[in-house]
Amino acid sequence: MQDIEELRVKFLDLEFDRTGFTVDAKQSAKIARAYGESRPAYTDPSDPNFEVCLPMLASLASGRRLPIDFPALGGISMDGGKSVNSLAPVRPGVKLTGRTHLHDIYAKSGRSGRMVFLVSRMQLYDSEGNHLASTDSRQVIREKPE
Amino acid sequence: MTVDNISDVEFGTELPAFTPDTTLAATSAFAEAVGYAGNGRFEDHEKARAQGLPGALAPGIMGMGLLSRVIHDWAPRGRIRQIDTVFRAPVLADHNHTISAIVTDIDEASGEVMLDLSIKNEKDETRVFGTATLVIPLS
Image (tube, rainbow over all chains, first blue to last red; front, side, top):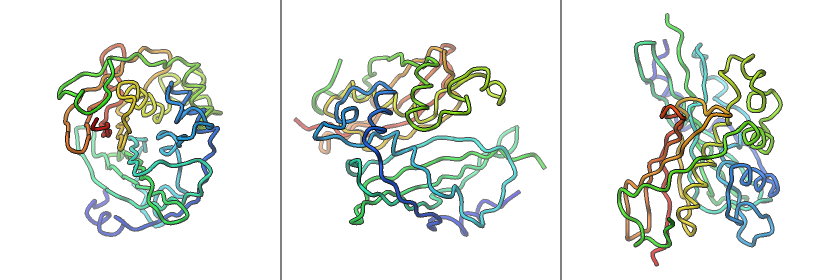
């Protein structure tokens, strides 16, 4: 069983991936319409205030899910959740750089064993270095009993 | 019921309950839009069951979209600053779901409003829960 504190000391807050994105306006609008969004600022690319919808930002995936030397935890991995922190509107067509680090590692124990939570945070910047948004992906690993 | 500015918001207010479209057609359309379609997990009950799932399901971030839609409908001039969703259990396609949201905090100086959010199925089991912070105009 991995020592959570050791993992935190070794891996937290160290950038392990840098990936470029350019969000397509039509795709973002299609996603927004698919969840029933009514605001033209999310559904109509011709709207002067059009911006990328939050689920689209949450869908952006880093090149690596974990640092290259992160140990295998040997359990069943599940998608535990997503969050988006929007600092400024993300406009389509803008070249974005996503810088990803492990933001948190923690564990919860129950009758069925231990679950380890890995929170990867991707910070999205435009080409001028403005921080526009951050997205968190929460990966849950149910460890196999020893 | 909608709110226009921060003075319209009251602590403890429950947003109008909302029944989202979580039919197989809707989960398929969302999966196709976001680029998750192809292996049947979101578009085909039989293919999903063959993968060990109880049936086809809604992509996790579709829940985020449904919740943000409810917030936008309630506060047409509000802007979501932060939304956090915890995927507690799958949102199954072709099952009925209800979205609830309640105001848990208000900062009248900044216009910030905090909400607790949930998506429950017809058995009143929570599938997704979370929080959101939105900013509503002061006037």
